[in-house]
Amino acid sequence: MTKITLVRHGTTVWVEQGKLHGRLDSPLGETGRKEAGLVAERLRGSHFDVFLTSPAGRAVETANIISRCIDIEPVEMLALQELDFGWLEGKKAINALHTDGTFLKNMQRAACLIIASWTGESRSHQYRRIRQFLDWLLLNHAGKNILLVTHASLHRVIFDTLLEAHLTRWSEDLAIQPCGISEVLLDKDNHVEWFKLNQIDHLRGQNGSLLSEDQSN
Image (cartoon, one colour):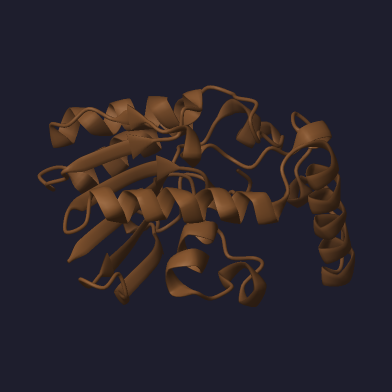
């Protein structure tokens, strides 16, 4: 059995400002550092054979905080970097535009993906990149416990690929919260036995609310 655990990076200064990262970066804010500490405590005592992180500073910072609780150092992996949004990077994210109506939001989302594909990286290229990464990962680390720290869209693409489904199509508004945990267990033939998306109980305060409720990357 191979178990893959994914953690999204914590809330950054740009997330708090509603800006889109992509390949650009922004450090964790105070909330993000708290989230990283909480997810580190949630994972404390867990055994991981492999610990990989996106090279983005926000992911590396999150991974380094986690590493203090699980006794393994993260290794940066270029394949885990966020989608390149090109011209849109550093600008307001879709969920910060305050557009009323699902149709208009979907139109804006589609327009952003078109702009990203023209000026950055297409979604089809991102899927091929992740397919190649997973082929490498499961060839070299089959039967191991694997921890990945990466980005919201990477959670969706990885699960799309492993499930041979289209998670982003049947749940466009699926939110992967900052420092949310997703898990998948694969059998010896790399078929999915079970999976859990966006586990966030460790991020809830005494009143039941999340430290942050963001959907951008």
